[in-house]
Length: 342
Image (cartoon, rainbow, N blue to C red; front, top):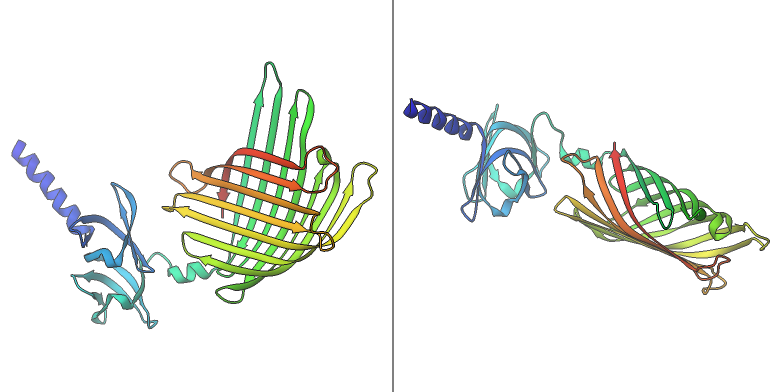
């Protein structure tokens, strides 16, 4: 009985290996799973023991997949069938029309028949939505309460982004309001080359705590894509704008032409953790000592196995060189629960 069980388990193990995809790396490792995608010189392997692995093709000695794959070569030719690379720089594609052997460097992408060409997926414009909420409170010697909520919507393509946002913040400390802010706006950015592009943006804000009945800021100019990689982006912006501020108290309204500077940076760690840094500097054209600086840095950590829930922790600083409020700078430390969907 024991020997029969051993034979049965061995047969199941051998059968699972025979039907699975196998990747052998240059350092001698053997990885078993399902090859879901080959894109940009990286093989994506879905495994039962470690989730999705990404292996660079130059680190792969050979791989074998009995299941059919759709393969697009650099020339634009598309074929379908089982694929294998038995070492060296050659890949073999077994299609209905025969066997094709070609250099692995000529493979632009490969994917499952039920999936989509990754290049088409990258170039498709699509909406992405995100909502966040953070609520904190304290009772006892002091009574504190704070609520913050935001909603963002992006229509993103390979070289342009249309974005909308809405923020709400309110806080009390021993019955006294310490925050009461509502803001919303829209922006559009488009790149006409790998580096250069243009942008426009507008924002409306109400903040009675800072004596602001209405602040309107609009700007437009050039965008410079300094970094544009899968894991990291850095965009600098410079342009001209207009700012109008109506105050809650008797102070006269202000309006002025402005210069608009900005930096936007994102960095993704192992496709899991994402850091985002944004900085804007908006001085008046006729008086550079009259300026506003907004800085926001945060990191997003996924919650659970899906891609919907995240926790975002960060710090936001807002500084005004000339203001009727008691303080020139507001600093907020936040932890938000974020939900994203398409």
